[in-house]
Every structure is written in structure tokens, then in C-alpha cells.
Image (tube, rainbow, N blue to C red; front, side, top):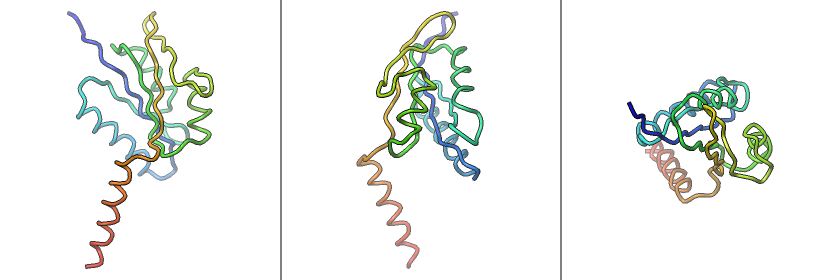
Length: 137
């Protein structure tokens, strides 16, 4: 039986002592998986929470994927984005492409940018502002 390859998507969260952070990352990963059938989606954390990014990378080594994209759910570039995550991925600082080894072969690995300044983020902030103002009535 032929298994059609998919893309792997590792959603990376920071991690927190508060449970909401982990729940938010895992729920976002679940929504992505439901929305996009072409991806095998997993989530991992940089610190405090488990599973770790390293643990999830190891899981991907046994998946039928033909590329892996690592997507940080971070707003801005900081130490984790610029140094820590690339180091875990085996990328040189400033590099966003590499290879991922699985099942005796190499596939492309790409590292996505953090959210940054995006019109969708601005819309979300306006939505939150409107919701807060609606509480005044």
C-alpha cells in the first residue's frame, strides 16, 4: 500500500508555568491539523512544558513526510528565535533552511519566521479591542 507523503509542521511554543500557554499552543496545532490535511502537525516547547522540541523532532523521524517546517508561535525575534531554535535544528544562526534526517534519508527542513508585524495580527488586536469595549455596555 502506498502512503502519500505529507509535510511535517512543528509548532514551537515558549512554555510557561501557567497551563494556558501549553493549551493555547496545542489547540492552535489541533486547529491547523483540522484545517490542512496535507500536514502532520505536532507541537513542542522550548522550556518548562513538555513535550520538548527535541522530543517532537524525534517523533517526526518516523512519519511519512517529505519536508519539515518548524513554525515558532512567537511574536518577535529574541534569543529563542535567533539562536536556540536554530541550534536545536542544526541550522547556522541566520539560516532558515537545512536538512532533516529520517528513515535513512534526508528531507528539506525549513524554519519559518515568528509572527512579526502582520495585518492579521492588527485585525486580531482590533477584534480584542472591540470585545473589551463591548463590555462597557
